[in-house]
Length: 195
Image (cartoon, rainbow, N blue to C red):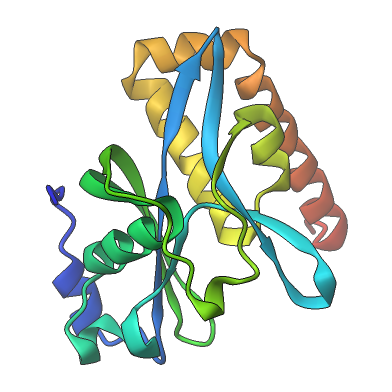
């Protein structure tokens, strides 16, 4: 898989990852003047359905630093498992080190190729098959760090890709994003008022 310039080894050498890491891929398409994201529905705790990007944990539940699997390799095998497609090219978007030391990595999957059907393992029984959903709907419903990675990607593509920016504007995706940020600021300021 072609990788971009992110120095994953440098991040991992800092030993932030405590127990495991997670990698997910974000893939979008522009069709009929609208933007769509490839997502999976995951049945979380208390039977609550969460929208996420295809991805999963590093093999054997260990950190890539300990097990020798880097986040790109995790993305590769998880993408095949959940989409039935092989990643040919991916670019780093975002990573987050959670309080428990768990690391989450997100990549823009630019090219992939069909290799078969998704490989459902016993542990994946709570994950639906991937499907394309309208970006304006997905953005509102994404789970936690998936939403943050999606926002970062939309902002990046809106600056770097003229076609994406035009479609995002015309399809109200940028308006939805702006409203979400505004609502977040209001909520945050009410919880943590400035003195």
